[in-house]
Amino acid sequence: MHGTEPSEAQLAALETMAQGGDDGPFTMVNIIKYKDQAIYPEGYDGPARTGREAYAQYTNTVSPLIYALGGSVAFQQDRELLFVGDATADADEVIIVNYPSRRAYLNMFYSPAYQGVIVHRKAGLVWRVLYQCTAKERG
Image (cartoon, rainbow, N blue to C red; front, top):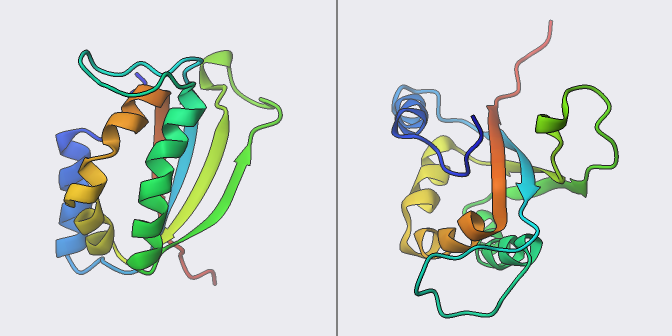
């Protein structure tokens, strides 16, 4: 099932990793699907936007937060071709973000600035899949 928000269990798993001594740098791979037209909650007083424009409003706030905590956007591109997989997995964009630690990510996630712009992400996306990845030494 696709969604846009982490479950309580997913947040708890990341929190456990951050507290359990596994709090080094990691990468978050974002695979996202945009709505044609953003759908905001009833009572939202803002301009009509496409899903991509709503998500851009979200990233305009979140990108400086990522850089302020020592993170960076390593990769961001539209997908060109669904090469392997079924049509339900056909995303619009892939974004890869480096974070200095899980604690830094969670602090950002729970911050008022971040929480205040989630409305744009929810309005703009059909779904997103995030993979938290950590580089492993290869022998």
